[in-house]
Amino acid sequence: MNRGIKFKYFLNILITIFSTYIGLLLSDLFISNLIKNDFNSKINYATKKYVKKLRKNAMNETIKLKQEGYLPVVNPNVLLKNHKNSRIKSWFPLAGKSNSKTYLSCDEGYGVVKYNSDRFGFRNNDENWDKIFQEYSTLFIGDSFIHGYCVNSNNTIPKTYEKLSGKLAFNLGMGNNNPYNYIATIKYLIEPLIKNGAMINEIYLIFYTNDNININSFTENKLLEGSSLIKDSNDINNLKIEISNIYNQKIISAIENIIETENPSPLPSFLEPFS
Image 1 (cartoon, rainbow, N blue to C red):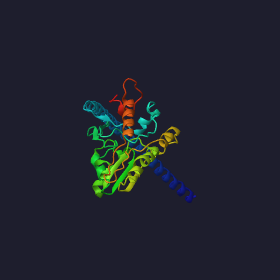
Image 2: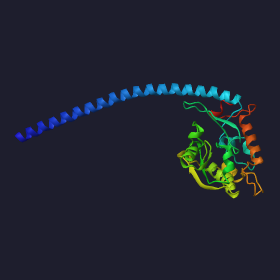
Image 3: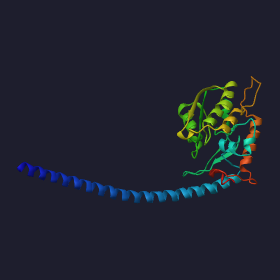
């Protein structure tokens, strides 16, 4: 009998301790969540307010840049999917307009990023292409990570690699790229470069999970009918890397179709200020 009383007494103590612990735990979770939600709501409000301010600043700055002759970055897939550009034969866009004052209409707190595109429309110092026959170089293929959206040119991945390694590096990335663009870059730029004697000894492809896209028959057909960006040269003693005149004319026409105000089509948000 005494053992039974002791067991019940001990069991009651355990139940009391457990109940108290559960009560305190639930109270703590409730209070913590309340404080967290209140804190997060304040953070979210402050963040949204700041982002709204940045967007307004970016809008105003891009309008000024346009007046100064700058063009917005037009991603290859935006060019490709335009209904007018879909009829351009033997062409797969890899980048934007060559030797052009370019801006990325996003602002992460240090202003709208702008740069001068190289002879192929990529984000490189154009004079570096003249060194590609004299020294080994590294090429980076990718999307916005490589292109360097919203960061200054000196802070892109290729430029950072160049500074750390001391090797000549080229940025062949464009925002919104996918495996079709990567294949096109290899097929229509890198292979012709190597064929012409460029000293390329490293190629890095950097991708992200959003590159896992479905097969697209239209893009696949355009990829198969594309043409080289490199202008043919028969002068072995004077090796030069120049953009094909035909490709250059097509890319300019394609960009004009995108920004044509007489026949406006739905534009991505980064092109709205330009339209």
